[in-house]
Image (tube, rainbow, N blue to C red):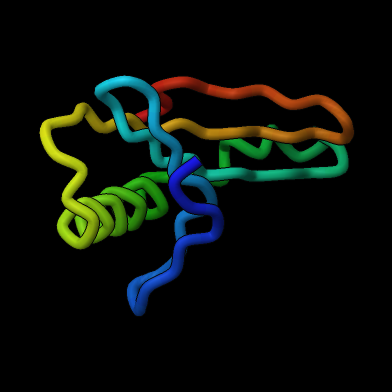
Length: 88
């Protein structure tokens, strides 16, 4: 894990993790139930755009070198956790 709840003046990224050759920016969404839809539905195009902008800022500040970038969504409903790899 590179960062948890990384903040800057533009917003916050829940998790930033690294795997060999890749930096992963994770958005975590939780709901008690899925009665009104899954938590992943809250990651709409506006949230995706904001996360891309935050990722670009983090990469510019930390300069991890030549890496791929991936955006994952972690959806939590009650006690069930689902990781959507490469969500957008």
